Length: 164
Image 1 (cartoon, rainbow, N blue to C red):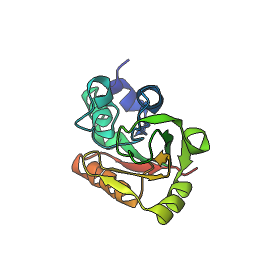
Image 2: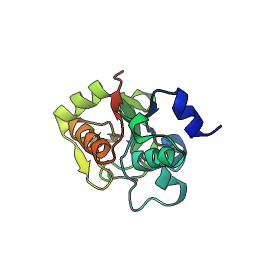
Image 3: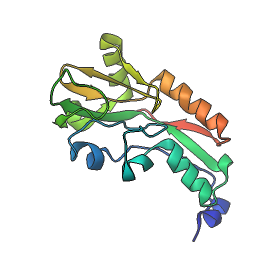
């Protein structure tokens, strides 16, 4: 069956991107964004597919009407333990999973950002923060606004979220 068939019986297709971090991050021993809108220019091969833009466009190519595609806002994100707290950018070397067994909730992220601030990646349209050797990426208000603009610009059906 095709997506075209499914789109006749399914009300919405909800896309929530949680970029194969454990395949592309932990196993590769680097940080990675949970839910970027766009790929980073340094990402190659399969890694270029794990973003909102590619995933939504793929559904459209398969016959899903744009108005049935809802884009998810992340309610939690991955955490990493940095190899060196002075190197904390995208694809920074990591020892392994960080705080919370590798996960951080939106509320925890907000509290952390209030204390230590955050950094914006204008290419991927996401933010991240770190404290000592702990690194995480969870969407914030700016990231949500960017996704809303993306949805509007591409005539998708809307956005959705959950908070844990």
